[in-house]
Length: 130
Image (tube, rainbow, N blue to C red; front, side, top):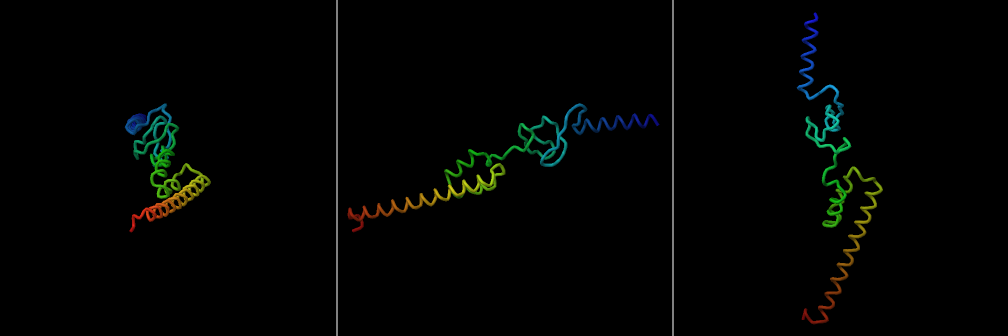
């Protein structure tokens, strides 16, 4: 009977070592796949997802604030889904940014039309369309 207990203990230790579990090491659950990983891990060995330094989920590059600002500056309201799909922004921030971007877009469209009309009037006065 003791031989079986010793054999089972050896098999369990070998199995635990092959799974990456070491005695004395603290383990945590991966927030993506719920597998146990080491506390110091920055990438899950099971699903391959990256974790940040605090052990939480590392944000995707397109959820960073600088990426959202650059996208809004380049393409305006077309980048609003980046704001609304960003899990770090509160609903108040999302609404405020949306209102600001839409208002700025309307203002820029109005200024563009006004400048175009003014340009056309000046070109008529110069006789370009004769």
